[in-house]
Each structure stands twice: as structure tokens, then as C-alpha cells.
Amino acid sequence: MSKDCLRVVDYLKNILDFRFQSKTLGPGFRRDPVSLLKRLELAVIHNFEIIGEANKNIARASPEFNLSK
Image 1 (cartoon, rainbow, N blue to C red):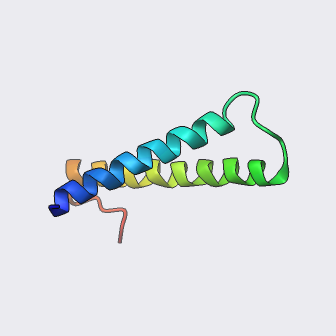
Image 2 (image 1 turned 135 degrees about the horizontal axis):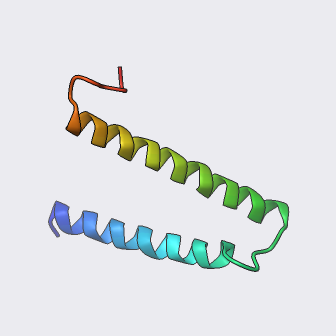
């Protein structure tokens, strides 16, 4: 299997994993400590993904303005 095919398999696995997590943490989710911590963890990860994507877009649009330095 090629490297690109393996990446696609990983992406599909991530989609299924997060789809399941979204379903279990959506409306009517349990309020036990483990579920609340998992929900917080996913929210923090999502925020870092948004920040990283914004940084990448700024670097593409304006290379002289680099937030990574």
C-alpha cells in the first residue's frame, strides 16, 4: 500500500473516531467527570487546530508576518 493510501486510511479512521465522539458527547451527553473531561479535551484540541490553521493561512497570505517566530 502506498504512503498516500495509508494517510487516507488514517484520515478515514480519524473521521470515524471523531464522528463517534461527537455522537456520544452531543446533546444529552453524560455529565460524569470522565465525559466532561473528554469534552473539554476535544474543545481545547479544536481550538489549537483553529489557531494552527489561522497561522498557516496568515503565513501563506503574508509571508513577512510570521507568528511562528
